[in-house]
Length: 244
Image (cartoon, rainbow, N blue to C red; front, side, top):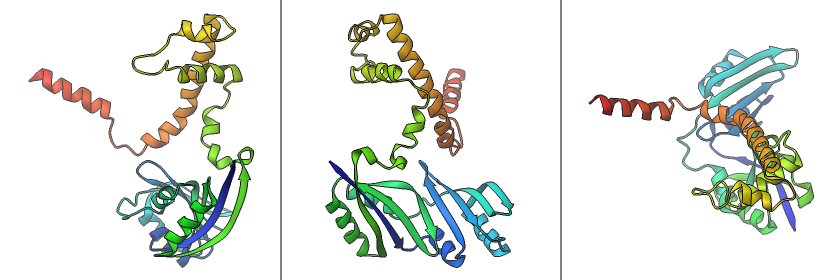
């Protein structure tokens, strides 16, 4: 089976695109989170006061630096008011969006992956109906050449987990061990392998621990945008009920 990777650039009404149009030497890279965007903005030249004002209006500055290589800033932003995300339209045509989106010289650059070349053609036709768009490239790739971006952060989630630990985790998952209620037990799982129950359990627990440790880095990115802890709110509400 083949996959298709397409690179396109688009022009439509978007604050990030407009900024990149006003400042041609600027590059903006956007990574979407659950309810906001993280933007990396770089410029090879010293930023003007006007550019700094525009950046400050984008969102919260998380990091800012300037050296011989130019100006670099990371911001957290939210464009929840946008009527329809172009990424939603990718999904409607069975095309998988590959972050980041790159804004450069008034264009938005996107990369998508699809299982059918016709899906990409239909997507292009849909986008051309209401915006300026150019297809920069379209290539066929095999399953063994899946873009690394499709495996990230997945590849990072499984860092330092051995093949035996992965096998133990996969067996438990596919056998319903993590269902509620559980559909199997550690004893039953171990009997499907060539190792003792204690050895199987050791592989499984180590896999779980490493997986959660790795996922914690991404969890912190997601929860960093949450203003309050819902568990603490729930506990506080229960305490008020008891007091009443």
